[in-house]
Structures are given as structure tokens and as C-alpha cells.
Image (cartoon, rainbow, N blue to C red):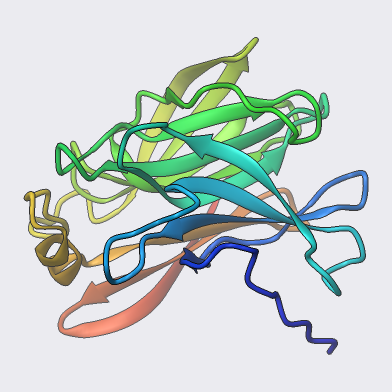
Length: 234
């Protein structure tokens, strides 16, 4: 197995690194990441979502793309993902937290029509959740799995893009929808993370056409990894 080190970009702050690599059809590799303020609260390059770019299959990462940001605000785009659509557009999604109002916004998305050089302004998916992971289906629809905040549990959602407009079509509870106390939405983010009991869904297409969903959760005082398979109706 070949291993490569991903160097820190040219900004003096830390970055969130919990997102999968996206391999584009043109050969580029992308890793979305959110810049973080330092311990003193300063973030000289701004709080924003960027994507690190490699053109040599991960050996070097000399450039990055600006994806989402809110000038003048203090808005974080956490656990972001980028996927490539059948028509070549790029779709980015993110869990968005407004540190001024101390509240989550609905999951946001942005679209690039030029390979990532320019992106549309972040817009709402209408999903009240966190950690949204998208997977593009064969017919162009989008399967999204996320930690829902207006209802308990991990949920799957089917959506489509009408032009650049996000349209939700159907949803389905996958885990924890009958449980209580899995999340918290107070203004104290440290407390919210401390009581959190599940999240970070990962999706993969299987050879038989089903979708494998894996996520972490905390059950009966034990941290575990759970998985399930989804059959997608055309």
C-alpha cells in the first residue's frame, strides 16, 4: 500500500480533515476541508470551506479551491463532501453552523460548473440535519444520508437537482428514529458534542447495485460501527 502525506496548505491555521477523497473524471483528487480559528480565535485566511487538489494521485497537493464561505460572518461548513454529477458539475454539501447565532442552519449545498474554479452561493437543501453524505445514483438523483435534527435518528433522503435548485423527493429513517437523547441543540457546542450519540455516515455502491451505509453510534454504553444496505428504487 502506498502512503502519502498531505501537507498543510499555506495558511497558519488548522483544518478539519474528516472527508473522503473525491476522484474526478479529469484525474484530479479533491479533499474538502474547513479552516479552523487558532486557540486565540484568529483565522487570518478566513473561515471557509476549501478543497485541496492533487493532480498526481495524492503525491502532492499544491493548490486548493475556494468552495463555500460567508464574508463578514462566522459560519462553519463542517463535514463537507464533494461529488461529481453525470453532467460534469460538482456538488458540495456541508453541515453549516452559525457561530454568531449559535445554531445550525439547514444543510447547505453549492454547485460548480467549471471544475471547481467558481461556485454558486451556499443554499439550503431544506434538510434540518448534520453530517450529510451524498451519493450520486445512476439516474442522476442524489441519495443523502444524514443525522437529522428535527426528528431523531439517521435518515436517508432522495433528492434531485432541477437546474441548480435542490428538490427533495422522499425520505426514510434508518436508525434511532424511536430513540431519545441522541443529540442536543443548545447554544453550548461543547455540550452538544459531549452528548452526541451517532453520526458520520459513509456510503459505497456494492456490486449488486445496493448501497452500503456505515456510521458510528453509541448503544448500551458501547461505541460501535453499524451498517445497513439500501435498495434504491428507480
